[in-house]
Length: 353
Image (tube, rainbow, N blue to C red; front, side):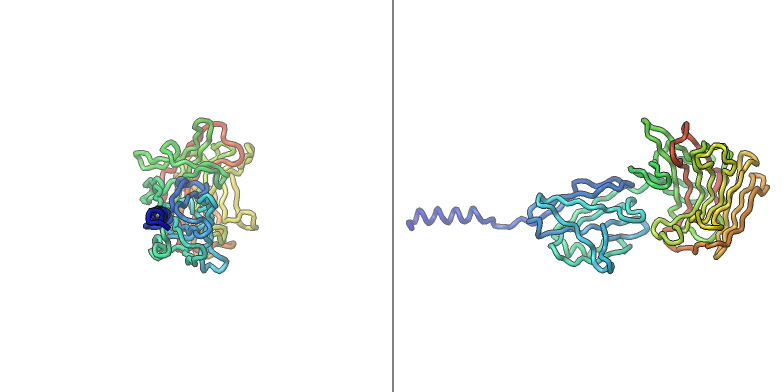
């Protein structure tokens, strides 16, 4: 080989081999908005897709960080997301509880076959995952809107796809939920551009055993027959004991001539001894309450002047209190068809003690 030919060959070899190999990188292409159950999507560049997988984590305010979409059957390792030949990847991130309310979503690019621990409600995104990954991306989503009512902070429910109850769309717009200058809470079902939106708030504070009292301004039986006003407890994460749901509900349940427009319920309502239905015709305002004790719930409906209209002392399958993610909720929604017009209700006061 001549010196000229050898020199040309060496130049070609140097040009063909990069001095530094590019590290694979990961990025989000679609991050669902807060309250959405849409798929999380991303893309890897600079690597061979079969050699890499994605570990996904979400962080929920007050509930910790969780492996997504799932963990293995033994809850030992996280299930990793495969990468397609074109470098794209897609996965559900909201696979249980209130995952759609995560304020942080993280994706970690790890070598295929990496044993990533299963994380269930740990305090923040695990630092150990940074050591396992060659590239990390974290998206931050806005916290839900909040209002102050009855001395507590309430978060306003919002979603982009129909959810229960109903299912309905719930909006955090000030057209649907607001607190007036007198401190009363307003909930309104609205129609915007042909789309109906309902309203729900829930305490950010965990509440358990105690007395829950709601002063309702509007006549309970004057609601549209399809509309439901709910005053209740609920646990989003723990589905045992029917989510520990204790209800006071106002509705005619889509039956205009139904005289029983109020009911007390320990869910599930279909079980014997779990529901009491009755008419409420004593004036426009009412004070509705339940006292939740161990093995006992005392329900009461009264006028604003204190006259008791109905009382029910229920000791049937009373759920135990939980120390996590259990709160008070108030919602205004519709069952079946939307109401004939926009509907507003006012809760003058709430008290927990």
